[in-house]
Length: 180
Ligand SMILES: [Zn+2]
Image 1 (tube, rainbow, N blue to C red):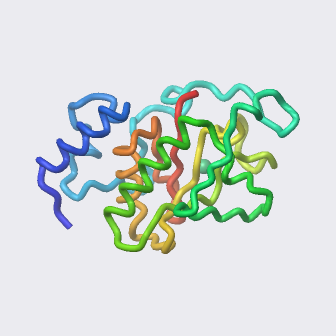
Image 2: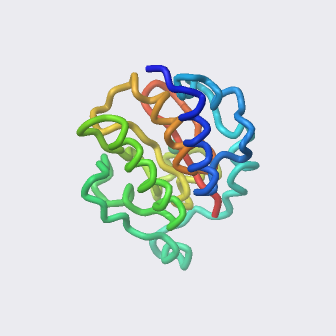
C-alpha cells in the first residue's frame, strides 16, 4: 500500500494543526512512502521523558491528582480492561483527545476496525519506574482485530493523531504518550 508524498504532506499538516509532527520537515520515519514505523522505532527520536516531560507521581485513587483524570466513555474504542477495574479508561484530557483522533483515523483506514487500548492509567505498578502510565498519560494500543501486521501503520497514525511520543515497542503493541 504505497502512499503518495502528497498524502504524507497533507497528513503532516493535519498533525501539525493538532499539535503533532514536531516540524514540517519529514523525518526519516515519516518520509517512508508506506507511512509505517519500524519495530523499535520512536517518534520523535528522543527519550520519552524529553518528549513528554518528567513523570512526577504515581497517581492513586485517593490522591488529588486522580481528579485530573477522566473516564473515557467511548463505546467505539475497545478497552481490554484485564484488571476489571475500569482503569484502562482513566486518562488525562490531552490523552483522550489524541485517542479520539487516532480512533477516527483507524476507522477511516480499516473497515470495521477501531482502536483497542490494552493499558492506560496503571494503578498497580505494573510498568517500569516513572512510567507515564502512572499519570494516565500513556496508552498501549493495538487495533480491535488484534492484527500484529497493522501495528507499524497504527503507530504512524498515532503520530498523525498528535501523540507527543509514539513507540512501536514490541510485536504485540504500540505505546503512545502525551505531555501533561
Ligand atoms: Zn506502555
